[in-house]
Length: 83
Length: 408
Image 1 (cartoon, each protein chain N blue to C red):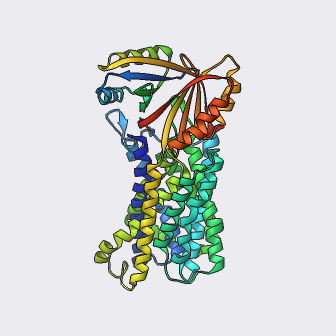
Image 2: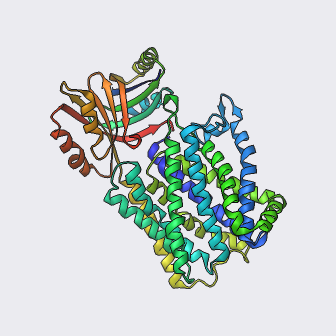
Image 3: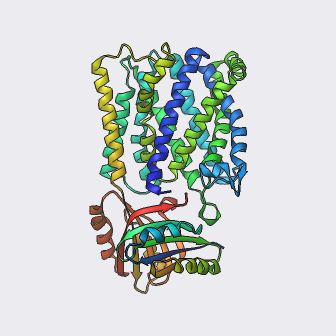
């Protein structure tokens, strides 16, 4: 089973590039977006199970500079080009 | 690697490789194999033969990863295509073979093939319409302007002063360019087929099977036009000049790999317009090559007016590429819904212009929309106003992407 999720991250001021480079070391983070708005980073995660998602969340929480995260687990996905 | 950077560097790398390939083709035709049909058949035969050891080499593992994964991270090993992928590859190969047959027919029979084949640059304009079908989105004004500028710029660079035959021009504007559109559509569809864990079919496998199938189609389609005697000469030439042809086709292989990989990242018209700048790179290579083989590559006899037209073409293409690269906005919109059937709202959301993907989520927000636009100004008109009109939406937040990195 494949589990997809979005993890939005708030970062301490001045630590975005450090958190970003640490996220790039996590292979389950397939897309990492630096964003402007309510969140500083938005990460798309693809894992095999909810247990693995938990492990990825743990890794993200352990990165120096991460202040807050919010996880959204994808239940269904529609891509316009594939409709 | 940064996705947007990759979207522009891959087709431009492909353009440089195509320009190198075109220069080698010119040299081989001038010095080694003068008959275009014999050259065409020989290059397909050698292309297939040289692709096998090349892909086997790319499959070798250094550490835990195959060498080919450094070119396309999705590559693991040779995968035999089946089902829809096989069908798309056969369609792309047939279209590729058709455009190659027309190309060699024009080279063999036309009084000035370069003059008429230059109109092949307009294929990216055709692809604007193909994109509208594939992406289910109308192209933006910026895209139409930029791609038309690139296509016309490349056309100006490629034009020669020769006579243009109306029938030959119809052949290029009709079946030649349409085959290219079908090829692009089929390859993009093949590249978009998802494997488990969100992976996609890799460009190395796609090119490998494409050259094998294209060779079979090209041989079948060209044999009646070329004649069996030329087929026999092509077989001999493919062994006599194997090394030179294999180098040429290895460069072509890599050019296609870059192009196919880019097709998975952006719109067909954008990728084609960027890769279509190869005549500009070929023009830049000509002064250097004229020192090596002055009888084959020569800039003499081109008057200043014609140079001015070519310079104008280069400027137009560069401005077109820059305007494409600098005008893209990506964003996410997080949506909170009022109690309602999610499928109904999902359909409303995916129909909004500019929304590429909708994810239904469990958590603080109910939907995540992935948005791609040509300007932030469009964000209000196209997305925000549309979302405000949907009664099932309780709240939403806009998150603009400043930079994006993707494992692709």
